[in-house]
Image (cartoon, rainbow, N blue to C red; front, top):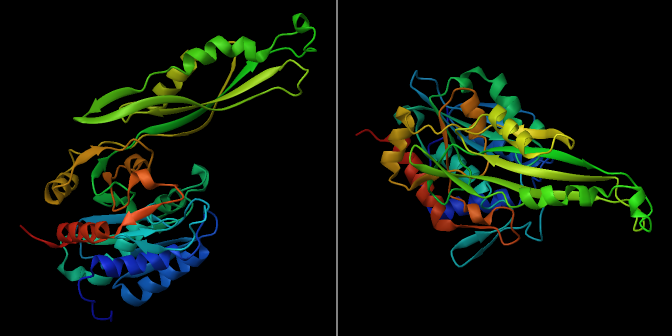
Length: 362
């Protein structure tokens, strides 16, 4: 038998939980301690089944045959920047992960604490996963989703990435392309005996660096296609012509574009005699505004609706055929900053919005 559900939490009580989560180090690859904390808390307080998957934790409330809604949040953070410990100041909680995305995790845990599964309109599940901030190949959701049949049957997934309490639909895809510009090494005093790879690629580099930020409207929401040079390497010594220049192109492509279309577009921008390799790619997330559960959440929340410019795991749920969107209390502009923080008030607003959606009948 589960313990008596606690009283409706306030923003302050959720902030206390968030501070506890922040003070548990969980840089990508080192999530064992926070996963153990979450697992133990759910086992004691949650009226449902708790499953551990590596450094991820799944909680599923009682199966009553209702449509399943999954709340989703990652446990890991980027490396610290002198912000390892939580502190309160001026109505904000500062610290590593406060906004990205332990604020969302704290709200998820508070909902499991406070809600009576028997009184909900939906069956409810929570997915706490590892390694979101690292390479996509290690992402914990990529392991958990294919292995969990009941999760793949969800009616909707709410990914609690920081959105400033807005509803952000879909997400852009991401592609990194490595371009190798060939040259021929020679002594810098006799450059006519070689070909300087930097000079060979200079005109192309200047052109591709001016690729415009291009707005695209999808179902009335704006996304922006971008292409940026993010790394550039050339040269072996100060007196040797570079025999190769290696350029990384980071391309963000909109939800109406397939991986194949994005690859073809990038290939067309690179001269045929330059090396071209897609080193990693993640497809975009579908804009699911036409899905009944999503439409209902948007209507009930009364929140601003926009497009998600960055990539999130909404894309993984989209690929599995599950309608998904981003909604969370964190501030997108505070992600990965030394002064990362989350407004304490946002925690209570997110809790109330989700509790009403999951619980209330009209």
